Length: 362
Ligand SMILES: NC(=O)c1ccc[n+]([C@@H]2O[C@H](COP(=O)([O-])OP(=O)(O)OC[C@H]3O[C@@H](n4cnc5c(N)ncnc54)[C@H](O)[C@@H]3O)[C@@H](O)[C@H]2O)c1
Image 1: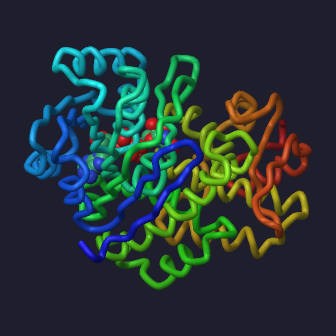
Image 2: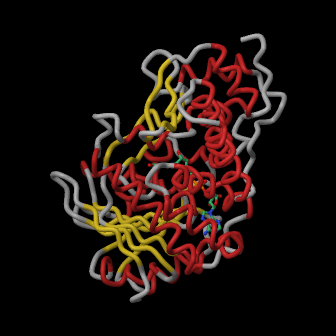
């Protein structure tokens, strides 16, 4: 286990924890959970081999399976999960282990935040997106019909085991979607090590080499947790920087009825945000070319489907819950990422054009 990477997390008022990254990081569950009674929350599509590997290390465990897909992130499912915990007899000092992608981490995380007013949760993310983003940082939650992630809680895990050897069974598209968040970290000012890994190891990354992925996931998680540590409860604006690429990204996901995956939408959102910054004069054309290069080298879309309506996307972006009434973007500037509100129509048109959307009538 010596070749695992570890990110130590210390947040005010919280117990410190470790994010362990690398091939077979799951084996660390033996130290962290073997003496507890454990409720394992997972999904049918998560290979049973991972769940069984976990169970073999545990004294007493029970598996709770939630439905697949974003629909699983509902109040109804969390209520059902909590009822099943109660029927099984999960008690205050027992442990929940969430093993799966971001949906499992968010839903099981939220159930853990509210069951018995909070039980401990260990997260074992098995999708690239959950390893680089969703599993760490303590945000948990579910969706309402009115919008995504509208109900939730901050509830830090007692640990995160990001086993990069589990990524091999993800579908190609899910894996690529995770690379969209990796592209975001690469394009952040702190992303130099991520860029170096992408430049040096693109074939291994596309082949999902577990040891190279250990380095990649580790570098991304370090960036995320530095931001989270500066703003754990999203109070001072620092954490909002993680939404780089997400203003257009979320709108694209909604407009496409979730036929576009989160990371794919974020990738196009990164091009949009850089083009907007370019049109506003903060960065030059070479920054836009660089963003396009990073996004396309990972097989991600630099443009949106051409039938997208700019007007509809603008309406959706105004509704983005991060926006403070108007339109808010996180833009790359020479001094780092900065929030920018209500850009003029000319700049918006140029940014839409850069992602292949005609916005002449906005
Ligand atoms: N809490 C946060 O900070 C945060 C951050 C980013 C995203 N999220 C949330 O994460 C969710 C998206 O996560 P996701 O992209 O992981 O989607 P997901 O959880 O739906 O997983 C994608 C699919 O891959 C399957 N899967 C996962 N791991 C697998 C594996 N190793 N082998 C085979 N199949 C596997 C899942 O069962 C699912 O069908 C969204 O709901 C988003 O809101 C949360």
